[in-house]
Image (tube, rainbow, N blue to C red; front, side, top):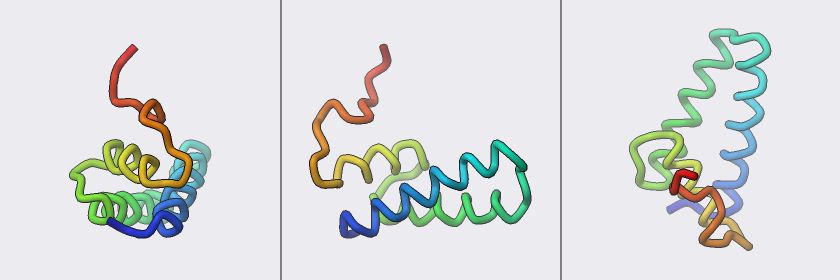
Amino acid sequence: MAHPVVLRNLIEQYETLQVLQAENGSDEVRRRMEDLAYTLCVSTGTRDVDTALIAARHRLPGARPEDDSVLTA
């Protein structure tokens, strides 16, 4: 598992690119998001980006069990 500082950086980059993708959807942004998704998955030992984001957030300082719960409402 990657260091929490690295995970925070990956999360922030991915979330920023999500906004850019929603705004303009360029190929460059899409490729970078795919690279970050892969890195997040490898860093957290998961297979999809949503699970990777949840796992990464749980490794951050101050995370609580309720944060990013996989339970549906």
